[in-house]
Image (cartoon, rainbow, N blue to C red):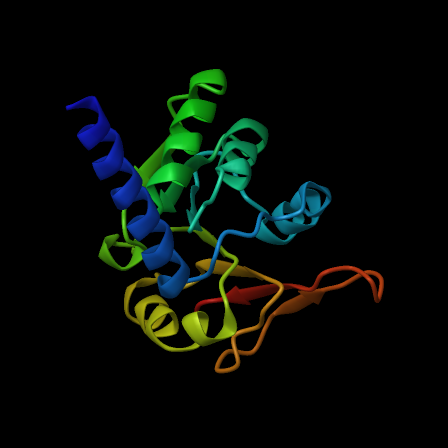
Length: 173
């Protein structure tokens, strides 16, 4: 019985990792050294709503909740990574910190003030841009780590040195 439960858990975990990789990107963590650059662009204020789409291990969500007192929400589709987030939340307990095991396309983003995404170009160009155009309120900021949105013009491209990763800031009209 226990072996069947473990097997089912492993199958669900593997499938959720595969689906999340196809949906937005495989898990590749944001560099910790880039968090200050990301949040400088975000200009996040207390009580604003911050989303990390495909939050991985929850690093950026925890950073937003602890350093900016924002309502920080991480969406993660891969069950193992979601469980890591929930485990980390035990050590960073704050009422403004929330992780959801959810497909980002099923979340209403209309209240978001800042959205952070680290997705592959193919994933962020189509369905995700359409979702942003339909749901985001005017003035909402979108920060893309590494990859630009080809159909939107960035307000700022932050790349202080040639070896630094580019971070793109977009603002919804």
